[in-house]
Image (cartoon, rainbow, N blue to C red; front, side):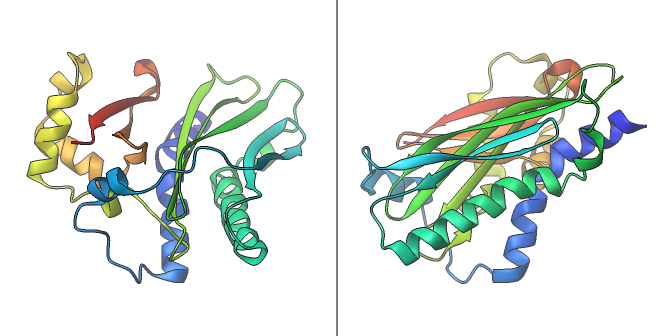
Length: 226
């Protein structure tokens, strides 16, 4: 059924984008021994010039950033093209396009830059889609993290080692959530490895853990960078 397909697409869209780009480029640079420790010492850019780009077709509207400062023009062009492709792939890799011609269907996605330095950028995309005659809308939350030195995407596994040590940090950060009370540590770890995504700020790492629609489509777990 269409709903099952879309729900599955939402869960795996971010992973598909990263996998496709990594397959083409390869991760040539190993992650720092402690990525979030590096972020603590990294110099975050607070004031920068940017504008908002828009992709619009039928009832699809997707917003994404275009940076205008702190790099050479050729470097900015490279960064902005990677952001543009990474953003639009979230939609096109989901095979959504043919389903939004009806006036009652809609797909909306907006962005927020969570972290930006000369080394890294972390962007979140939040929105929803609803297809005509579907039972309910689906809430969307995607992430796009880029290493601006190597020009390669960063997924959760590039930020942390997804192992038993990280699992303890993750479970300690979970509030009293019924969903996690009923799922084994083994399944949590498996989902962190296969479907979870992440974004970061100067002081925190945020894990986007995808859930069934009845539980809100996703939850965000905050882990202090300490």
